[in-house]
Image 1 (cartoon, rainbow, N blue to C red):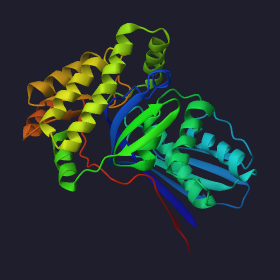
Image 2: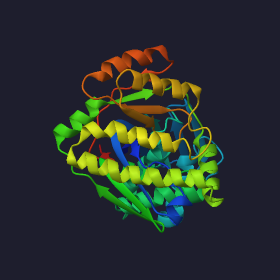
Image 3: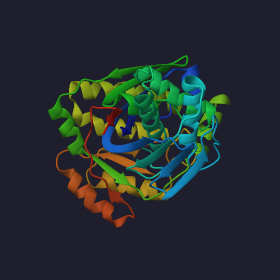
Length: 341
């Protein structure tokens, strides 16, 4: 028997950062994101040899453990060991034996929610194997608890829910609760949006934890400019939802640009000279707006390029050390299945 699962990575289009505590707890947050056809994958093979093997394909590294109730979370596979520890603690009460093979279509630090998506994928594989009673909200919440509480990893709440639910979603965060509002978008509109959005990898892998820590600290200290910037980004999410549902695509770039200008005020390091140069080049060649996907500092950027301007923008960005990433938007979230025989 082989258990497989996959979950899509996401593009944050508006409101990013307002899903991070303590802002989301004090003021309520809102984001709009959409999943794309880049994935995290997990293959789980049950074993009966008293061993656990975790294989990180991207890093060409594997870890071997004896089958025990608790695995150390101090290696590169801490996402997998953190998931395993909660599954044993909350559901099985006894150790498991298996091999787990993991792969992600984007590098770490990409700003596409890779860590959270991989965690959702791992939990999906365990849920499929053990027939756990986890609905979409339950699984996303469990992923958030493992990542943010058990493992103490800095970040927000949107990524786990995006990976689990899939599609275009307007998410609201209030008093610890998350409400996922799926947006019903016609297929032709999704195709038009994918045509007009240009996804660009800067070639810079960044560690988001420092930026997120500073952002949270700014809220704790009630720093006026960063907090006001987050208020503006929450408003940006509402505006983006409205114009996408109405099909007013000519406004998307301007709303992105509005958010980008305020996002840079949330914390230091969100942008830098190279990112600014890429952004200015894209705007100069026809993009009407754009942003960093994720906390900032590197990873992927997305630009809105109406008409046929994507070709001029793509050509202009060749002068920087990055690459254009072809993609499509997806409607499905976490998917799991079992191969028998």
